[in-house]
Amino acid sequence: MDWLSILKDLEKNKDDKLEAVGYIRDMLDYGDKPDDKAIKIIDNLAVQATLQNDNDIKESILDAMLEGSKAPDIEKSINLTPIINHLNEFNDECLSYILSMLGNSGNVKYRQIIESYKDNSKLEEDVEEALSELDYRIKK
Image (cartoon, rainbow, N blue to C red; front, top):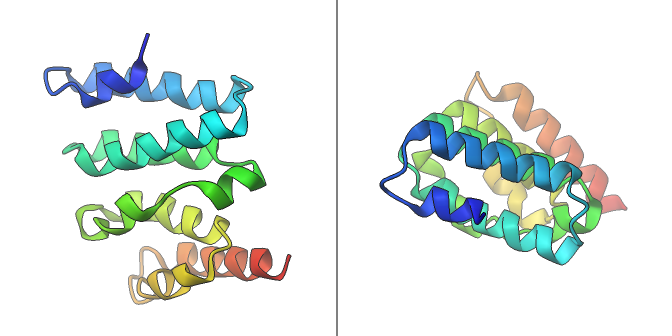
């Protein structure tokens, strides 16, 4: 079954979409997908995260992306641009995942975006962790 198509289907209900994301997350976590296929799936999830209008579904997608991108080559290769272009559409819970992914990317161009959230008291710890992770990965 094409689980991504369930996310794209406007007729599908929240439970169907959450189940689909759960399956995709498990597949990324335990499915032993080659890196290029995992990156393609995660890149599609990044787009879907911006298209969903339910915060629970968005958060679930971002969680799947974060868990699915644990391999160093994947973390550096996923395309976070769709999400970055829609940052103002995410709540603090979602931003927590996004900050982690930005830090894990090791991409210095994300520092300014991460730092822009340091005045949000709910995200203070996430910002510190993301910057620490970013600095660590830049040095590697």
